[in-house]
Amino acid sequence: MYGVRDGLFGESPASEALEDELAWEKTFANESKERRKRSPLLYMAGRAPKAAVQHVTKRNKLLDFVTKNIKPGPILDIGCAGGILWLDV
Image 1 (cartoon, rainbow, N blue to C red):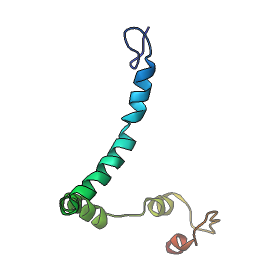
Image 2: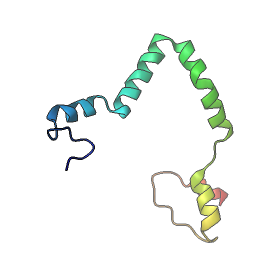
Image 3: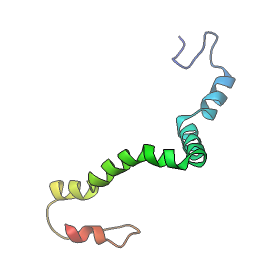
């Protein structure tokens, strides 16, 4: 039985190459760069509402999780940052 990606006669090598070429992760980044170059003001105007909402609703998900689920006490922070996040706990 053929899977969703398989064609009528089986898997096509060209379809895998095309899928890699047109992957959303690649095309979105490239298209975004091109739009920013082509019309920077329009690009900023399109991004402004989303950026404003993200700025206003910004929250620290890790800190929220820790304060709700971890009991108070010493914390061993193994990471590359300065540990300033944990001063608020």
